[in-house]
Image (tube, rainbow, N blue to C red; front, side):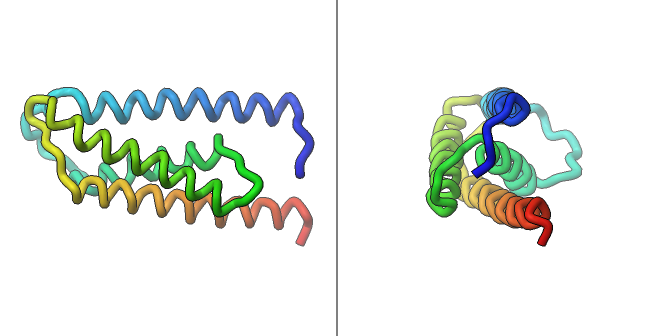
Length: 131
């Protein structure tokens, strides 16, 4: 276990602020009326995957649990519950609709985030120990 320092507390607080801002941006991006079709470089599912990859990484960073699998399970549960609620509430916005495949893309993004975070965390800890 690492000692708690002012720097680590600052890092967690910064992570929480980043998570809040990011989540607001995701919410606004999915709950404002859809703009007219503009040529997009990314498909809808790619945008969902990327957005939830970012959300998953931030959730991994700010959550903590003594058991790693429970930490990652809680990250997945939080993000995917929000993703489902997000899809259902989009029906209330003109030009938007719920799509289960959007939620699947969200799940892919969160799963990738957990995998990347897990590998990066393992690599970082191994490097700190000098192995």
